[in-house]
Image (cartoon, rainbow, N blue to C red; front, side, top):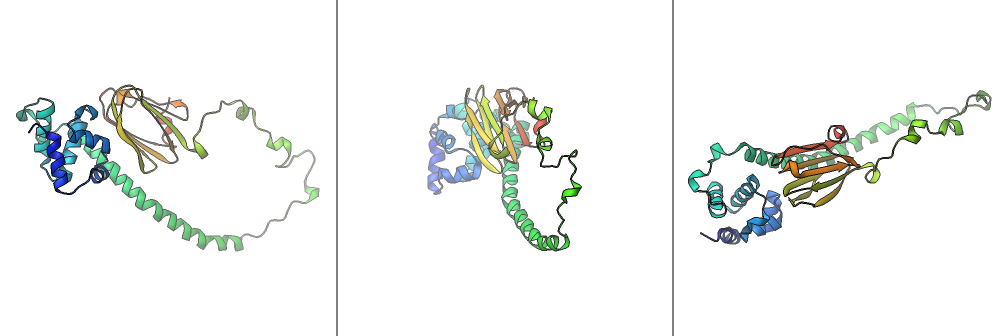
Length: 264
């Protein structure tokens, strides 16, 4: 069938499934799904990403995923069906990408469930401990005037408050809002990029040469790229280290504790 995308669309409409539902379940952008249904493969990432998109779409609408991928490659890449690898011999890179996508979903669900629970536990713990701390600690008496000597400045004196030479001469580094990590990312070639900032998917699209994104992250950023050699980034103005060579699939988990290993 020449109209490959039309076949997918008809199957989706027959089952009453919207593109928004498929996008929410697969984390594939609606624009990419629309391009697939229009047979506009130029809007899709190449290699394992296109096959992964087609396989995920087929599963959502009830088609055989492997047969659908075979048909897609035969239609758009001129690859004979007999040359398509079976599930048992699928490339390691494609398996890695699928596993990373499932892992990211699991991490997101764990964060959404775990954070409210931790907050609730801390709230009740503080309510129980606060009265005990207030009653068990006797009030401290203020220092008498006789105990303060002129040659020993107090903590509130100008001498004690003066910044050290190191603090005044150090170069200031740009920071995000309220101490958050400021991420600036840019691609030098086509590169599929997904960013999960503090448990929320903020970027999931194919970035082209010269495309830029800026993200504010308070706790943790999970960055997945499909062409590591074309991906560059900086954090708080400091250049990031290369994540890998061209065409490599990489995942980086960056927090304030691991920041030093990702910047130059």
